[in-house]
Image 1 (cartoon, rainbow, N blue to C red):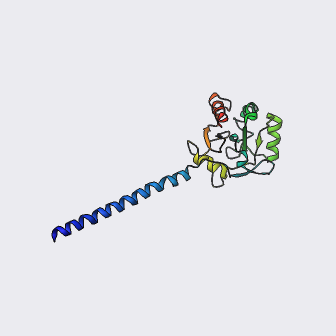
Image 2: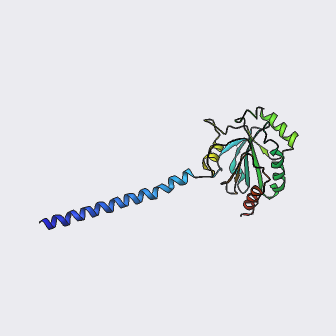
Image 3: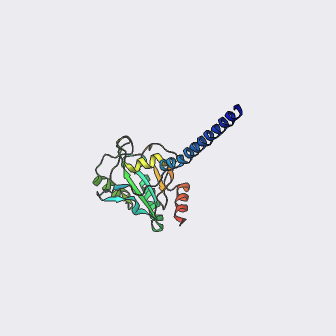
Length: 200
């Protein structure tokens, strides 16, 4: 009788052990799905407005390599407009686009209206790449685009200053984050753009 109880007890423990193992396995396989959502680096489907108020779905840029940059007219980095335009002129025929988002979050260095910003960029730097509606890149009113960029780029974290750059591949994924002080024409930045443009 004692032997039968021992065998029955052992079988019950085995069943519980197997059940726990299955539960743990299911929990482990469920985690990557959650993580993959958190790490979704794709910007397609996000809607923004250009500087003239036109709605733009970023999926319109499928097949293009993008540089997204927050800009300002009265910043020490403002002369980077010249390098941005040079970079754009060099690679636009190969499928490269720059998307510039004016932002007044840093030192009040972009106080103007959209019309004033557009006039400044075209008359001072002959900017030919696309300008967008002024956005917030910090705080509770942060735009959906910058929420995506700052939480999924590597490294993640808030934009530090004007003229921070994010490079997006042909499939809409964030591939590189470049600091505000880094000139757009530096060798490392140009190399990344050329590599992304060369991909099918």
